[in-house]
Every structure is written in structure tokens, then in C-alpha cells.
Amino acid sequence: MDLYGKDFLCTQEWEVEELMAVLDLAAKMKRDRFSPRWSRVLENKTFFMFFYNPSVRTRQSFECAATELGGHAQFLEPGAMRLKTEKTAGETIEDATQVMSRYASGLGIRILEDKIGAYGEGDDLLRQYARWASIPIISMAHDKYHPCQGLADIMGWAEWFGQGPGHTLDMGVLEGKKLLMTWGHGALARSWCSVQEGLLIASRFGMHITLACPEGYDLDPQVIEWTKTNCGAHGTEFQIVHDPCSGYEGAHVVYSRHWMSPRAYVDGEFQKQKEVEMALKYPQWICDEEKMALTTDAIFTHPMPVDRGHEVTDAVASGPRSVIYNVAENRLHVQKALMALTMGNL
Image: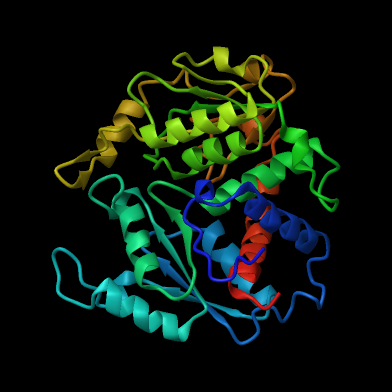
């Protein structure tokens, strides 16, 4: 299997066998993190990181990954690059991408809700870069998908239900397990990328899916259809509920996160304050110990940053069955494996 040069914009666009290649290598790299066998994979190679939005885990994990592979990650900001936009003159995506392809071995792009004027614009931007690039384009989170987070999620869940970190990854342990993806109220207006990626990748690995949200917080219809199709291929169940409690029953993995409504953009502007005010009207949509008691001894997962006291209580987020830090660590390992396979000399 040759993944060299392959773009990574959404896990749904990769075969399960290709995702497994990344996960298997990530597990090996995690088990033997500083082995000399990995330290020259990206020797003398640069990975450009193009940040429209700031981050904590994304920048840190990609920079660490590049360093541990013997390469270099270079931080870029659009404001310092004189790029053409709808409102300003500058260099076209075609020209910028063609040049960057001559310099670097890969390009990551992060663009989220408040840097676009309508849902889908971030995804369109990444695909324009992918059209002109001769190097792999990797989503570091955009308005539709967060594929690196999806890999880190599924790896963390499989480790928990399997033999644990440091052992061979057995994805079969997730088959037949139930994921509850539940909306959480909060003071942050978040994009759909992480939750949509969670639905897609969990359904690709044979999990039952329950999506819980208040009326009016529907996700991308295409993602819902893909999730249904994935579940159908495995003979697993997909359901949507609109109350804050019933979905917890029988759950093995609980993923509580706020996401914006489909009405978040008006006339090309992101309505952040309105979204926050609307979300705070649903305090019953919080993951707490009472709801977790309805589950099948479920683990709690979240891509971070956690809006504690809104999406989830401290008792759950910092509890003994929380995997938030395990998953955050796995961002490093899956990205390291992804870079090695798409850009490296393995």
C-alpha cells in the first residue's frame, strides 16, 4: 500500500485498510517513540503549517511529530503572506501552492468557523490547495472535518477497550460498541468538524451510533447519510434522539461536545454571540455523573479544549474513565505516522 503524496482531508475518503496502516504505525511509534528507526524519516524535509485559526494541541503535536521524524514544521499565517481574497488583491492559491510545493514536502491547513462566511468555505479552500499542490495537503481541522482528531479518537478508544497503550492495536474491540455523540451546551460556538469526523470514523469501525441534540442543531446531511451507510455496511444501528438523557442508555463511549446550529452564518458573517446566547438556554444538556450512570460503564471522550461546567462536569472530565488526555496524546502519534507515510522515506 502506497500512501506517499496522498491528501488527508476526511477519513471517509480513505479506505479502512489505509486508515489501519496509519493506526498500526502510530501504535508502533507510540510504543517505541524515540527509536532511531523513526528519527530520519523526514530528514531535511519541511512541513508547512498554515494557520488561519490558532491552536494548542494541533501546532504542538505537529511540530513535535516533525522534530521526532527528523524534519521541521514551519508556522505560517495568512496575514503575513499577501494572499488574494474576495476583498484584497494578492497572490492566487494556484501560484502560492505551486511555489510551496517546490519548497516543502507537505502542507497542513487549519481554518475554522470564524474565518469563513458560510459553512463549506473552509473545505472548498483545502480542496483548491489540493488541486494545485504536488505535495500532500493535510487538514489540521477545517469547518467540515478534522481527520487527525478522528484517528486519535478511535485509537484512544481501541486502546481502552483493548490491551492498552503500548500493545498492538486491535480495532475489533470496538465492533458492536455504542458511541453516544451528544450535543453539550456551552459558551463557545464550535464548528462541526470534530463531531462529524467522530461519527464517520466510529461507524467505519463497526460501532453503533446514537446522535443526541436539541431540535435545530442538525449536522451536515451528507455526513449523516455517510454515517447511515457505514452503519448499514456493518449491520449496526444509527439513531438520532432529541432529549438529553435517553441516548446514554447502553453507551460504551460518551462524546459530549457543543456544536453550532445550521443558522450560524447570516449574510456572510458568523453569528458567534447569538450562537452562544442560544446554546446557554439548554443547561440540561450537560454530561454529568447521573447521566453517565445510565451507560454501560462508558468512557468519556472529548477532542479538547473542554468547556467544563457546560459540556461536561469536572467530575466526569477528570474522572477515572475519562480518556481526554490519552486521545490528546494520540494526536502526536497518528500525525507522526501520517506524515511518515505521506511524506517520508519509509
